[in-house]
Structures are given as C-alpha cells and as structure tokens.
Amino acid sequence: MKKSLMLLFTVIFSLSALAGCGESKPEQEADGDKQSDTGQKTEKKVNEFGWEVPEKTIEINFYSGQDNPDKVNKYQAGLQKYILENFNVKLNNIVYDVDQKEKVNLMLASGDYPEVITGLSESQAQQWVNQGKAVEIGQYMDQYGGNIKSQLEPWFKSYFSQDGKLYMLPKFWGMLPIPDFSAHIRNDWYTAMGSPKFETPEQYYDILKQMQAAHPKNAKGEKTYALSGIAPVTTNMVPTLAGMWGLQNGYKVSPEGDMTHWVNTQEGLELTKFMNQIYRDGLLDPDTFVNKFDEWKAKFSSERIMGHIGWWWQSWNAGHEVWQKTNKDLKEDQRYVQVGLKAAGAEKAYLSPKNARGGTFTIITDKAKHPEDIVKWMNFSITDMGTRLIGWGAPNQPDSVWKFENGKWSWVEEAKQAIINATWNYEKTDMLGQVYLMLVEGQGTMKDDGKSTLWFDQNFNNEAKWKKIMNDNLKDTIYDNSMGSITIPANDPLLITKQQIDDQLETLWAKTVMSKTEEEMTKNFNDMKDKLNSAGLHDIEKYRSDVYKDRMKNWK
Image 1 (cartoon, one colour):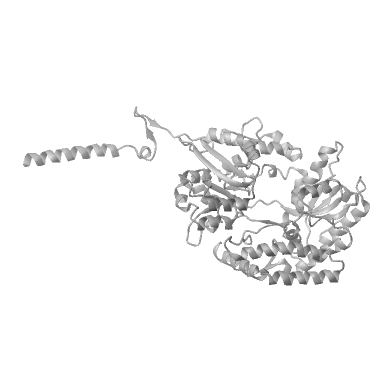
Image 2 (spheres, rainbow, N blue to C red; image 1 turned 90 degrees about the vertical axis):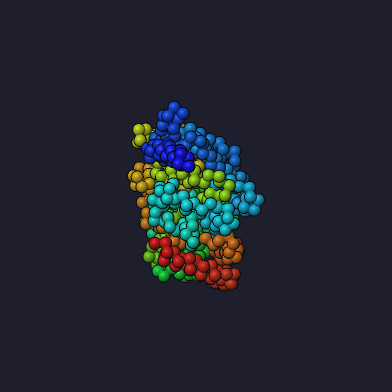
C-alpha cells in the first residue's frame, strides 16, 4: 500500500510540473501570438493604417438599397480590391434594382438576406430587431468597439434600446456645417441688374420678377418663369420655405418641445400666400407640382427659370455644369448662386436641417457567423483614416485623389484643383469607389484635423470661389435637427396615417397655391387644414412632441 501511494504521488507531481511549464510562457504569447512548429513566435501583421490584418479573410456581404447591380459592381471593384489586398477584408455591396422598402420587407419575410444590411430607416431597423433577426452588438463594444464609442459621442447612448441593448449603428453621422437647401438666383442676370440687396422672400421674388421681365423668353422663344420647383413639392420645396419663416424642417418647435406642423401655423399660411402670389402673377412654372428632376433640368438648362428653392446642387447640376459642356465661351458668372432668405417676422432662418445622430442605420443580421469580425471592421472604418479610405477611395493609385505614405496623408494636387475649379469629372469619383463601401462613416468634420470630411468634393470649400460664396451666404441657416428627426415605427398604425396625410397634402397644397384669388387661397388653406387634422395630423403632432420631450430628457 505504501509503495502504491508513493508511486501515485510521484505521477501527480510530475504532471503538475509539466502543467506549470505550460503556464510559464509569456503573457503576450498566451493572448494570441502563434507558435510555429520550430518554436518561433509568429508576429501579427499590422498595416500602415493600424489595422491588424487577419490570417483568414473576413468577408462582409451587405445590402445597401436600390441601384443598378452592374454599375455598383463596376464602381466598387477598385476599392474592394485594394481593401482585400491590404486589409484581407472583402466587402461586397449588394444592391437590387427594386424598391428598397419592398426588397427589405421581402428579405425579412423570406429569410433570404446577407450578414449586414445598411441604409435602413430607424423604424425599418427596429423591425429586424423585433423579429429577432438583428444581432445585439453592445456585447462587443468593450472589447472591439472603442473607436465606435468615442467617435459617436455625444450620441452613442441614444442608439441603445430602452432595455439597454445595442442593435443598430448609423450609416451616416456627424454635423457637416455646409448648406443643403437654399434659394437660387441666376447670377449673371442678377449682377446685370446692379446686384440689388434682398433679404426676405418677398424682396427675392421682386428681383426675380424684374429679371423675368428683362428675359421673358429664352433663345427658342419659350416663355420663362420667375420660380420653379420639383415634385413632390411638399417634401422638396416646402420645408425650406417653412425654414424661411422660422420653422424647423416643417415644424414649429416650442421651448417645451411641442411640435406643430406648418399647416397649423400662421407661418404656413404666410408662405402659401407668398407662393400663391407668384402663381397669380403667372410667374410660377405651371409644371412645378409635377416636374420630375430630368424634366425640370431640361427646362432649367434651357434658360427658362430665374429662381429655384431646393437642394444647393440642383442649380449647379442643371445650370453651369450643363452649359460648360455645350458653350465653350461660357462666362464664369453665368451660373446660379445660392442665397439665404428670412421672412421679416422670423427670428432665424432654418434652411438646412442636419441630423448629426444619423438618419439611416446599419444592422448585423443573424446570418453573420462571426459578428465580432464585422464589428472589428466597423471599428476601423469609423475612424478618421478609415473614413478617408471609404470616402475618398484607395490612395497611391494612378487615379487616386490622395496619397498615404509613411503615416502621413496628402491630396493629389491635380484632383484638388479640379474640384476648386469645378472641372472635376464625377464619373472618376464613381470609378474610385468613393462611398460605395460605407457602413458606419461620419460625414462631419474629422476629429484628427478638424476640417477633413467624407465627401471628397466638400474638402476645399474655402478655396473654391463659388462654394465659398454659397457657404458664406448660408452659414447662419444650418442647424442641428437631431432631436427633431423623428420617424414613426413601421408597426405603428400612425405611419399609415402619416402616409395618407402626405399624399393628401401634396394635392391639397397644389390646389391652394393655384387659387385664383387671395380669398380663395385662404379658404382652400383652411379647408386643407381641416381635412388633414381630421385625417389625424394632430395625432402625428402629439406623437412627435412626446418623442421630442423624451429626447430632451434622456439624450443629453
């Protein structure tokens, strides 16, 4: 018995000693560095961007919405190849030439969808959460999401559900202090008038009216108009008009957080009266309420329109960017400039609402086998250097717009000057894959230098004459509307009510604007208001007010 016990103790001691030898290897090696058969430690490869290159390729397939698949595959190929070669990450942007809402609903119903879906509204993303199809990613934040947490401040906690779970991240986020919407005026004709000063919508229209009188027909003998717009007008033009009267994205917001739709305000009546006057003068483009963009662009570039209210880029795209291709003698000032307007009684003009928190979202679905790898990529992609890569395309290539060497980046001067001089070919932007592989990019100014931005063509505004003029004209009209950017959940019956009201509003407001007298306009406006309120507009106002007040309390 004694001999047997002594033998047993000897075996146990020997095994313990061997185990101790195994535990004595350096901590760093135990945390992940591999040991080769020859005993040599394999170093993890970190590329010049600071990304730890995985041994096994990370492949991320993501659906991003409606587009032409052939076009997207063509445009993403170059940047996709660069990221695969330098990061060992393959990003596949999947699109279908089918309505995004229809496709997302079909995916959800059929169970046929990729690992990641991006470009979802908040209510769409919530549908996936409600059905258990979205991965809870809060569990990965401490270990893999340090950059995500720091970059998304101060909004990070606003993405969590009420029970403290994190399922979605913003595809776009950040506050870029450049205009989106404005009034537009034909610049060469305006300067020929002596550049008279104007500040209010009425003064603006008076100048357009004089301009139209001086140019009643275009070169083809077609009638010209003081103002035009693009359908649907109540989403493309009216929020900007309302901003001129001091409303925020179509709503009057009280200090307490009560939100009132423009239809139920005196300001709404005044802006409608303004548009009705232009119509009754015969100077509103009669196709304003039905114009599709291409139709409007043809009319605009045919020199039939003096002014416009809408996106800043629309008059560029339909004006001088057309003319410089067709007129080799085009003068520099033959173009439209963007201007700010403020009604006399308004304290401030709110023309360009910004949602710094982000308006569309990205989810990782339950199809993902390794969601932590996707979070790792997002955690790099969301950094300033990651955003440059995704936003500007690959550096150091024959057609690149930027260089990245020895840890420092710089612009390719020829590309920079093409933007400044408005000679940049935007087909080239597409071929560089710019913004085609986005999942969680910031569109505000980057934190590392306080001036770079995701959008390549918005990086030189202070050096580009006409963009600087535009930005100076509109700098006080840009505002953060993150608190007021409110969507109704897809499963809430109130969403159907909203859609019905939106459809009625376009028709009813067109009828009101095209009233033959001011008295008829006032009657039609009140009828419109009564019909929309009866259809549930007050319910929408209450919903928005409740959400706004809750955000005032919990988001900050």
